[in-house]
Amino acid sequence: MEKKLKRKFILLGVAAVLILLLLVGAGFHYFSYRQMYRSLDLTLSYVINHSDAYEEGSGTASNSEKEGTGEGTEAETEGLIITGIKDGDVSVKTLPEDEHNLLEKLVIGFRDFGDSIAGNVELTPESRYRMRYFLITLDENGNVEKTSLSHIAEINEETARQLALNQYRVHKKSGMIEYARSSYYYKSVPQPDGRTVIGFLECTQEVRSVNAMRAITLLVCMFVVVLFVVILRLLSRRAIAPYVENIISQKQFITNASHELKTPLAIISANAEAIEMINGKSEWTDNILAQVRRSTGLINSMLALARMSETQKIELTQVGLSDVVRESVTDFLPVAGQKGRKLESEIADGIFVMGDRNLLMELSNILIDNAVKYCDDDGTIHVTLRKKGKSGAVLSVANDYQDGAGMDCSRFFRRFYRGDSSHNSGMEGHGIGLSMAKSITEKMGGSIGAAWKDGIITFTVSL
Image (cartoon, rainbow, N blue to C red; front, side):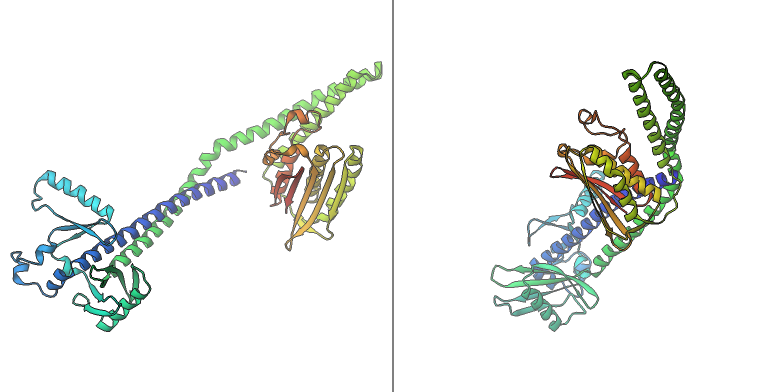
Protein backbone atom coordinates (compact mmCIF):
# COMPACT_ATOMS: atom_id res chain seq x y z
CA MET A 1 0.00 0.00 0.00
CA GLU A 2 2.78 2.42 0.92
CA LYS A 3 4.60 1.81 -2.37
CA LYS A 4 1.40 2.39 -4.32
CA LEU A 5 0.73 5.66 -2.51
CA LYS A 6 4.32 6.83 -3.02
CA ARG A 7 4.12 6.02 -6.72
CA LYS A 8 0.85 7.91 -7.09
CA PHE A 9 2.20 10.85 -5.08
CA ILE A 10 5.32 11.06 -7.27
CA LEU A 11 3.37 10.69 -10.52
CA LEU A 12 0.92 13.43 -9.59
CA GLY A 13 3.75 15.74 -8.52
CA VAL A 14 5.71 15.13 -11.72
CA ALA A 15 2.57 15.62 -13.82
CA ALA A 16 1.91 18.97 -12.13
CA VAL A 17 5.50 20.12 -12.70
CA LEU A 18 5.46 18.97 -16.33
CA ILE A 19 2.25 20.88 -17.01
CA LEU A 20 3.69 23.99 -15.36
CA LEU A 21 6.98 23.74 -17.27
CA LEU A 22 5.12 23.10 -20.52
CA LEU A 23 2.99 26.21 -20.08
CA VAL A 24 5.93 28.38 -19.02
CA GLY A 25 8.20 27.02 -21.77
CA ALA A 26 5.55 27.39 -24.45
CA GLY A 27 4.83 30.95 -23.35
CA PHE A 28 8.52 31.82 -23.22
CA HIS A 29 9.21 30.48 -26.72
CA TYR A 30 6.11 32.10 -28.14
CA PHE A 31 7.21 35.42 -26.68
CA SER A 32 10.81 34.94 -27.91
CA TYR A 33 9.78 34.14 -31.48
CA ARG A 34 7.23 36.92 -31.54
CA GLN A 35 9.77 39.40 -30.23
CA MET A 36 12.33 38.26 -32.82
CA TYR A 37 9.85 38.58 -35.68
CA ARG A 38 8.73 42.00 -34.45
CA SER A 39 12.32 43.25 -34.23
CA LEU A 40 13.14 41.93 -37.70
CA ASP A 41 9.95 43.39 -39.12
CA LEU A 42 10.55 46.83 -37.63
CA THR A 43 14.18 46.87 -38.74
CA LEU A 44 13.41 45.80 -42.29
CA SER A 45 10.48 48.23 -42.52
CA TYR A 46 12.75 51.08 -41.48
CA VAL A 47 15.47 50.02 -43.94
CA ILE A 48 12.96 49.84 -46.81
CA ASN A 49 11.41 53.20 -45.96
CA HIS A 50 14.87 54.83 -45.62
CA SER A 51 16.64 52.84 -48.28
CA ASP A 52 18.05 55.92 -50.03
CA ALA A 53 19.88 57.12 -46.93
CA TYR A 54 21.18 53.63 -46.20
CA GLU A 55 22.41 53.09 -49.71
CA GLU A 56 24.27 56.41 -49.59
CA GLY A 57 26.03 55.29 -46.43
CA SER A 58 26.96 51.81 -47.70
CA GLY A 59 30.52 50.69 -48.03
CA THR A 60 33.34 52.42 -46.16
CA ALA A 61 32.39 55.38 -44.04
CA SER A 62 34.04 58.74 -44.66
CA ASN A 63 36.47 60.21 -42.17
CA SER A 64 33.96 62.85 -41.16
CA GLU A 65 31.42 60.11 -40.34
CA LYS A 66 33.94 58.12 -38.30
CA GLU A 67 34.92 61.24 -36.36
CA GLY A 68 31.33 62.07 -35.73
CA THR A 69 31.59 65.51 -37.33
CA GLY A 70 30.11 64.82 -40.72
CA GLU A 71 26.61 65.62 -41.83
CA GLY A 72 24.03 63.72 -43.81
CA THR A 73 23.37 59.99 -43.50
CA GLU A 74 24.90 59.44 -40.07
CA ALA A 75 22.36 61.79 -38.54
CA GLU A 76 19.66 59.59 -40.00
CA THR A 77 20.42 56.71 -37.62
CA GLU A 78 22.29 58.20 -34.70
CA GLY A 79 20.62 57.23 -31.42
CA LEU A 80 17.22 56.09 -32.74
CA ILE A 81 14.65 53.71 -31.34
CA ILE A 82 12.27 52.20 -33.89
CA THR A 83 8.79 51.25 -32.66
CA GLY A 84 5.87 49.87 -34.60
CA ILE A 85 2.66 51.81 -35.11
CA LYS A 86 0.77 49.68 -37.58
CA ASP A 87 1.60 47.16 -40.24
CA GLY A 88 4.30 48.56 -42.52
CA ASP A 89 4.82 51.82 -40.57
CA VAL A 90 7.40 52.74 -37.97
CA SER A 91 7.90 55.52 -35.46
CA VAL A 92 11.34 56.94 -34.62
CA LYS A 93 12.33 58.42 -31.26
CA THR A 94 15.63 60.26 -30.69
CA LEU A 95 17.62 59.20 -27.63
CA PRO A 96 18.64 61.84 -25.08
CA GLU A 97 22.19 63.06 -25.61
CA ASP A 98 23.12 63.54 -21.97
CA GLU A 99 22.91 60.33 -19.95
CA HIS A 100 25.11 61.37 -17.03
CA ASN A 101 22.31 62.39 -14.75
CA LEU A 102 21.34 59.57 -12.36
CA LEU A 103 17.61 60.14 -12.79
CA GLU A 104 17.97 60.14 -16.57
CA LYS A 105 19.92 56.88 -16.38
CA LEU A 106 17.15 55.31 -14.30
CA VAL A 107 14.51 56.47 -16.77
CA ILE A 108 16.60 55.21 -19.68
CA GLY A 109 17.00 51.85 -17.95
CA PHE A 110 13.23 51.44 -17.61
CA ARG A 111 12.78 52.62 -21.19
CA ASP A 112 15.31 50.11 -22.48
CA PHE A 113 13.59 47.33 -20.56
CA GLY A 114 10.23 48.32 -22.00
CA ASP A 115 11.66 48.52 -25.51
CA SER A 116 13.14 45.04 -25.07
CA ILE A 117 9.83 43.59 -23.91
CA ALA A 118 7.97 45.30 -26.75
CA GLY A 119 10.48 44.11 -29.34
CA ASN A 120 11.50 47.63 -30.37
CA VAL A 121 14.79 48.14 -32.21
CA GLU A 122 17.55 50.60 -31.36
CA LEU A 123 19.66 51.85 -34.26
CA THR A 124 23.07 53.40 -33.80
CA PRO A 125 25.54 54.87 -36.33
CA GLU A 126 27.10 51.39 -36.62
CA SER A 127 23.84 49.61 -37.35
CA ARG A 128 24.14 50.05 -41.12
CA TYR A 129 27.43 48.13 -41.09
CA ARG A 130 26.10 45.25 -39.03
CA MET A 131 22.90 44.65 -40.99
CA ARG A 132 23.10 42.39 -44.02
CA TYR A 133 20.20 42.85 -46.39
CA PHE A 134 19.24 43.35 -50.02
CA LEU A 135 16.30 45.11 -51.65
CA ILE A 136 14.43 44.39 -54.88
CA THR A 137 12.11 46.94 -56.45
CA LEU A 138 9.32 45.68 -58.72
CA ASP A 139 7.24 47.76 -61.09
CA GLU A 140 3.45 47.75 -61.31
CA ASN A 141 3.51 44.58 -63.44
CA GLY A 142 5.74 42.66 -61.09
CA ASN A 143 8.91 42.97 -63.14
CA VAL A 144 12.25 43.63 -61.48
CA GLU A 145 13.12 47.29 -61.85
CA LYS A 146 16.00 47.73 -59.43
CA THR A 147 18.25 45.65 -57.17
CA SER A 148 20.26 46.89 -54.18
CA LEU A 149 22.93 44.38 -53.15
CA SER A 150 25.54 46.63 -51.54
CA HIS A 151 24.80 45.26 -48.04
CA ILE A 152 24.97 41.53 -48.85
CA ALA A 153 27.82 39.28 -49.97
CA GLU A 154 26.53 35.78 -50.66
CA ILE A 155 23.57 36.76 -52.87
CA ASN A 156 24.14 37.67 -56.50
CA GLU A 157 21.76 39.64 -58.65
CA GLU A 158 20.16 36.65 -60.35
CA THR A 159 19.51 34.89 -57.06
CA ALA A 160 18.08 38.06 -55.55
CA ARG A 161 15.72 38.48 -58.49
CA GLN A 162 14.56 34.87 -58.25
CA LEU A 163 13.96 35.01 -54.49
CA ALA A 164 12.01 38.26 -54.80
CA LEU A 165 9.85 36.96 -57.65
CA ASN A 166 9.14 33.73 -55.76
CA GLN A 167 7.90 35.64 -52.73
CA TYR A 168 5.95 38.09 -54.90
CA ARG A 169 4.11 35.26 -56.66
CA VAL A 170 2.97 33.54 -53.46
CA HIS A 171 1.33 36.83 -52.38
CA LYS A 172 2.71 36.53 -48.86
CA LYS A 173 3.52 39.87 -47.30
CA SER A 174 6.26 38.68 -44.92
CA GLY A 175 7.91 35.53 -43.64
CA MET A 176 11.10 33.55 -43.19
CA ILE A 177 13.09 31.61 -45.79
CA GLU A 178 16.25 29.49 -45.72
CA TYR A 179 18.89 29.84 -48.44
CA ALA A 180 22.46 28.53 -48.52
CA ARG A 181 22.33 27.66 -44.80
CA SER A 182 21.34 31.23 -43.97
CA SER A 183 18.02 32.56 -42.70
CA TYR A 184 16.36 35.62 -44.23
CA TYR A 185 13.35 37.58 -43.09
CA TYR A 186 11.54 39.11 -46.03
CA LYS A 187 8.85 41.73 -46.32
CA SER A 188 6.94 43.24 -49.22
CA VAL A 189 6.06 46.95 -48.93
CA PRO A 190 3.86 48.58 -51.64
CA GLN A 191 4.89 52.11 -52.59
CA PRO A 192 2.58 55.08 -53.33
CA ASP A 193 3.65 55.13 -57.00
CA GLY A 194 2.49 51.55 -57.54
CA ARG A 195 5.87 49.90 -57.23
CA THR A 196 6.68 47.23 -54.65
CA VAL A 197 9.87 46.96 -52.63
CA ILE A 198 10.75 43.52 -51.29
CA GLY A 199 13.46 43.49 -48.64
CA PHE A 200 15.42 40.51 -47.34
CA LEU A 201 17.17 40.84 -43.97
CA GLU A 202 19.79 38.22 -43.03
CA CYS A 203 18.91 36.90 -39.54
CA THR A 204 20.81 33.64 -39.19
CA GLN A 205 22.30 34.51 -35.82
CA GLU A 206 18.97 35.65 -34.41
CA VAL A 207 17.27 32.40 -35.45
CA ARG A 208 20.13 30.32 -34.10
CA SER A 209 20.06 32.21 -30.82
CA VAL A 210 16.36 31.57 -30.35
CA ASN A 211 16.78 27.88 -31.27
CA ALA A 212 19.72 27.58 -28.89
CA MET A 213 17.63 29.15 -26.14
CA ARG A 214 14.89 26.62 -26.86
CA ALA A 215 17.36 23.73 -26.56
CA ILE A 216 18.78 25.14 -23.34
CA THR A 217 15.29 25.61 -21.92
CA LEU A 218 14.43 22.01 -22.81
CA LEU A 219 17.56 20.72 -21.09
CA VAL A 220 16.87 22.85 -18.02
CA CYS A 221 13.29 21.53 -17.90
CA MET A 222 14.53 17.95 -18.09
CA PHE A 223 17.03 18.63 -15.33
CA VAL A 224 14.31 20.23 -13.18
CA VAL A 225 12.02 17.22 -13.68
CA VAL A 226 14.77 14.75 -12.77
CA LEU A 227 15.74 16.81 -9.73
CA PHE A 228 12.09 17.11 -8.73
CA VAL A 229 11.63 13.33 -8.96
CA VAL A 230 14.68 12.76 -6.75
CA ILE A 231 13.41 15.26 -4.18
CA LEU A 232 9.92 13.74 -4.25
CA ARG A 233 11.31 10.26 -3.72
CA LEU A 234 13.23 11.48 -0.70
CA LEU A 235 10.26 13.35 0.77
CA SER A 236 7.38 11.13 -0.33
CA ARG A 237 7.66 8.75 2.61
CA ARG A 238 7.40 11.62 5.07
CA ALA A 239 4.59 13.26 3.08
CA ILE A 240 2.33 10.20 2.98
CA ALA A 241 3.29 8.80 6.39
CA PRO A 242 0.25 10.33 8.20
CA TYR A 243 -2.10 9.05 5.51
CA VAL A 244 -0.60 5.54 5.61
CA GLU A 245 -0.75 5.49 9.40
CA ASN A 246 -4.40 6.57 9.27
CA ILE A 247 -5.31 3.81 6.83
CA ILE A 248 -3.51 1.19 8.90
CA SER A 249 -5.27 2.42 12.03
CA GLN A 250 -8.64 2.23 10.29
CA LYS A 251 -8.01 -1.33 9.14
CA GLN A 252 -6.87 -2.37 12.60
CA PHE A 253 -9.95 -0.77 14.12
CA ILE A 254 -12.28 -2.52 11.67
CA THR A 255 -10.60 -5.87 12.27
CA ASN A 256 -10.50 -5.54 16.05
CA ALA A 257 -14.03 -4.13 16.33
CA SER A 258 -15.41 -6.86 14.07
CA HIS A 259 -13.85 -9.61 16.17
CA GLU A 260 -15.00 -7.97 19.40
CA LEU A 261 -18.57 -7.69 18.10
CA LYS A 262 -18.78 -11.32 17.09
CA THR A 263 -18.76 -12.54 20.69
CA PRO A 264 -21.74 -10.50 21.99
CA LEU A 265 -23.68 -11.27 18.80
CA ALA A 266 -23.08 -14.96 19.31
CA ILE A 267 -24.28 -14.65 22.92
CA ILE A 268 -27.39 -12.71 21.86
CA SER A 269 -28.17 -15.32 19.21
CA ALA A 270 -27.71 -18.18 21.69
CA ASN A 271 -29.95 -16.50 24.27
CA ALA A 272 -32.65 -15.84 21.68
CA GLU A 273 -32.58 -19.47 20.60
CA ALA A 274 -32.76 -20.56 24.25
CA ILE A 275 -35.80 -18.34 24.80
CA GLU A 276 -37.43 -19.94 21.74
CA MET A 277 -36.74 -23.42 23.14
CA ILE A 278 -38.34 -22.47 26.47
CA ASN A 279 -41.23 -20.25 25.41
CA GLY A 280 -41.54 -21.07 21.76
CA LYS A 281 -41.03 -18.80 18.74
CA SER A 282 -42.38 -15.29 18.80
CA GLU A 283 -42.24 -12.09 16.82
CA TRP A 284 -39.64 -10.71 19.23
CA THR A 285 -37.23 -13.62 19.00
CA ASP A 286 -37.57 -13.67 15.20
CA ASN A 287 -36.64 -9.97 15.08
CA ILE A 288 -33.68 -10.52 17.40
CA LEU A 289 -32.31 -13.39 15.31
CA ALA A 290 -32.90 -11.46 12.06
CA GLN A 291 -30.94 -8.47 13.35
CA VAL A 292 -28.19 -10.76 14.62
CA ARG A 293 -27.89 -12.33 11.17
CA ARG A 294 -27.88 -8.87 9.59
CA SER A 295 -25.17 -7.59 11.93
CA THR A 296 -23.11 -10.74 11.45
CA GLY A 297 -23.31 -10.30 7.67
CA LEU A 298 -22.21 -6.67 7.99
CA ILE A 299 -19.22 -7.67 10.14
CA ASN A 300 -18.21 -10.39 7.68
CA SER A 301 -18.49 -7.94 4.79
CA MET A 302 -16.35 -5.37 6.61
CA LEU A 303 -13.69 -7.99 7.30
CA ALA A 304 -13.75 -9.15 3.69
CA LEU A 305 -13.42 -5.57 2.45
CA ALA A 306 -10.51 -4.89 4.82
CA ARG A 307 -8.73 -8.00 3.57
CA MET A 308 -9.50 -7.05 -0.02
CA SER A 309 -7.81 -3.66 0.32
CA GLU A 310 -4.58 -5.17 1.61
CA THR A 311 -1.64 -5.00 -0.76
CA GLN A 312 -0.69 -8.68 -0.87
CA LYS A 313 -0.32 -9.76 -4.45
CA ILE A 314 -2.58 -12.47 -5.71
CA GLU A 315 -1.32 -15.31 -7.86
CA LEU A 316 -2.82 -15.01 -11.33
CA THR A 317 -3.54 -18.14 -13.32
CA GLN A 318 -5.47 -18.83 -16.49
CA VAL A 319 -9.13 -19.11 -15.57
CA GLY A 320 -12.07 -20.12 -17.74
CA LEU A 321 -14.24 -17.06 -17.24
CA SER A 322 -17.05 -18.48 -19.37
CA ASP A 323 -17.53 -21.38 -16.93
CA VAL A 324 -17.31 -19.08 -13.90
CA VAL A 325 -19.98 -16.66 -15.13
CA ARG A 326 -22.22 -19.47 -16.36
CA GLU A 327 -22.04 -21.17 -12.95
CA SER A 328 -22.87 -17.89 -11.20
CA VAL A 329 -25.90 -17.30 -13.45
CA THR A 330 -27.16 -20.84 -12.74
CA ASP A 331 -26.91 -20.26 -8.98
CA PHE A 332 -28.96 -17.04 -9.17
CA LEU A 333 -31.72 -18.31 -11.46
CA PRO A 334 -33.90 -19.55 -8.54
CA VAL A 335 -33.28 -16.37 -6.54
CA ALA A 336 -34.33 -14.17 -9.47
CA GLY A 337 -37.41 -16.32 -10.09
CA GLN A 338 -38.51 -16.03 -6.45
CA LYS A 339 -38.32 -12.23 -6.65
CA GLY A 340 -40.24 -12.11 -9.92
CA ARG A 341 -37.22 -11.12 -12.07
CA LYS A 342 -36.20 -12.64 -15.35
CA LEU A 343 -32.51 -13.59 -15.63
CA GLU A 344 -31.07 -13.91 -19.13
CA SER A 345 -27.50 -14.57 -20.22
CA GLU A 346 -25.39 -14.38 -23.36
CA ILE A 347 -22.05 -16.00 -22.55
CA ALA A 348 -19.45 -16.69 -25.22
CA ASP A 349 -17.64 -20.01 -24.93
CA GLY A 350 -13.92 -20.48 -24.49
CA ILE A 351 -13.05 -17.16 -22.85
CA PHE A 352 -10.00 -17.37 -20.59
CA VAL A 353 -8.39 -14.58 -18.55
CA MET A 354 -5.49 -14.29 -16.14
CA GLY A 355 -6.92 -14.02 -12.62
CA ASP A 356 -7.98 -15.81 -9.46
CA ARG A 357 -10.94 -18.15 -9.84
CA ASN A 358 -12.40 -17.52 -6.39
CA LEU A 359 -12.19 -13.76 -6.80
CA LEU A 360 -13.73 -13.93 -10.27
CA MET A 361 -16.59 -16.02 -8.89
CA GLU A 362 -17.05 -13.47 -6.09
CA LEU A 363 -17.05 -10.64 -8.63
CA SER A 364 -19.67 -12.31 -10.80
CA ASN A 365 -21.84 -13.13 -7.77
CA ILE A 366 -21.69 -9.55 -6.47
CA LEU A 367 -22.77 -8.04 -9.80
CA ILE A 368 -25.61 -10.48 -10.40
CA ASP A 369 -26.79 -10.30 -6.78
CA ASN A 370 -26.81 -6.50 -6.98
CA ALA A 371 -28.82 -6.65 -10.24
CA VAL A 372 -31.39 -9.01 -8.68
CA LYS A 373 -31.81 -6.77 -5.62
CA TYR A 374 -32.27 -3.51 -7.45
CA CYS A 375 -34.06 -4.65 -10.60
CA ASP A 376 -37.56 -3.25 -11.06
CA ASP A 377 -40.50 -5.53 -10.32
CA ASP A 378 -41.11 -7.93 -13.22
CA GLY A 379 -37.91 -6.58 -14.76
CA THR A 380 -35.15 -8.35 -16.67
CA ILE A 381 -31.51 -8.94 -15.81
CA HIS A 382 -29.17 -9.56 -18.72
CA VAL A 383 -25.66 -10.98 -18.25
CA THR A 384 -23.27 -10.71 -21.20
CA LEU A 385 -19.71 -12.01 -21.56
CA ARG A 386 -17.71 -11.38 -24.70
CA LYS A 387 -14.08 -11.56 -25.73
CA LYS A 388 -11.92 -8.46 -25.89
CA GLY A 389 -8.82 -8.53 -28.04
CA LYS A 390 -6.58 -11.59 -27.85
CA SER A 391 -6.57 -12.23 -24.11
CA GLY A 392 -9.17 -9.92 -22.57
CA ALA A 393 -12.86 -10.10 -21.74
CA VAL A 394 -15.80 -7.79 -21.02
CA LEU A 395 -18.47 -8.78 -18.52
CA SER A 396 -21.70 -6.73 -18.51
CA VAL A 397 -24.59 -7.07 -16.08
CA ALA A 398 -27.65 -4.94 -16.91
CA ASN A 399 -31.04 -4.66 -15.25
CA ASP A 400 -34.18 -2.55 -15.48
CA TYR A 401 -33.97 0.42 -13.09
CA GLN A 402 -36.34 3.25 -13.89
CA ASP A 403 -35.38 5.30 -10.80
CA GLY A 404 -31.77 5.66 -11.96
CA ALA A 405 -32.29 8.83 -14.00
CA GLY A 406 -29.98 11.61 -12.92
CA MET A 407 -28.02 9.50 -10.44
CA ASP A 408 -24.22 9.68 -10.22
CA CYS A 409 -23.33 6.09 -11.08
CA SER A 410 -19.73 6.51 -9.91
CA ARG A 411 -21.01 6.73 -6.32
CA PHE A 412 -22.20 3.13 -6.42
CA PHE A 413 -18.62 1.97 -5.83
CA ARG A 414 -18.22 3.93 -2.60
CA ARG A 415 -18.29 1.98 0.62
CA PHE A 416 -21.73 1.80 2.30
CA TYR A 417 -23.36 3.81 -0.48
CA ARG A 418 -26.92 2.64 -1.21
CA GLY A 419 -28.39 5.48 -3.24
CA ASP A 420 -31.69 6.92 -2.08
CA SER A 421 -32.24 5.65 1.46
CA SER A 422 -36.01 5.94 1.12
CA HIS A 423 -35.96 3.74 -1.98
CA ASN A 424 -33.58 1.19 -0.51
CA SER A 425 -34.75 1.08 3.08
CA GLY A 426 -36.24 -2.35 2.57
CA MET A 427 -33.34 -3.71 0.58
CA GLU A 428 -30.92 -6.28 1.91
CA GLY A 429 -27.19 -5.62 2.01
CA HIS A 430 -24.98 -2.86 3.35
CA GLY A 431 -23.60 -1.07 0.29
CA ILE A 432 -20.27 -2.89 0.43
CA GLY A 433 -20.61 -5.35 -2.46
CA LEU A 434 -19.83 -2.98 -5.35
CA SER A 435 -16.88 -1.55 -3.44
CA MET A 436 -15.55 -5.10 -3.12
CA ALA A 437 -16.19 -5.66 -6.83
CA LYS A 438 -14.06 -2.63 -7.64
CA SER A 439 -11.24 -3.85 -5.39
CA ILE A 440 -11.34 -7.32 -6.97
CA THR A 441 -11.25 -5.86 -10.48
CA GLU A 442 -8.33 -3.56 -9.72
CA LYS A 443 -6.36 -6.38 -8.09
CA MET A 444 -6.51 -8.25 -11.39
CA GLY A 445 -5.55 -5.19 -13.44
CA GLY A 446 -9.03 -4.51 -14.81
CA SER A 447 -11.55 -1.68 -14.62
CA ILE A 448 -15.22 -1.41 -13.69
CA GLY A 449 -17.82 1.22 -14.48
CA ALA A 450 -21.57 1.87 -14.39
CA ALA A 451 -23.92 3.72 -16.71
CA TRP A 452 -27.68 4.36 -16.88
CA LYS A 453 -29.61 4.84 -20.11
CA ASP A 454 -33.27 4.47 -21.09
CA GLY A 455 -34.31 2.88 -17.80
CA ILE A 456 -31.49 0.32 -17.75
CA ILE A 457 -28.39 0.42 -15.56
CA THR A 458 -25.34 -1.51 -16.74
CA PHE A 459 -22.23 -2.52 -14.82
CA THR A 460 -19.29 -3.30 -17.09
CA VAL A 461 -16.04 -5.04 -16.12
CA SER A 462 -13.05 -5.07 -18.48
CA LEU A 463 -10.33 -7.64 -17.78
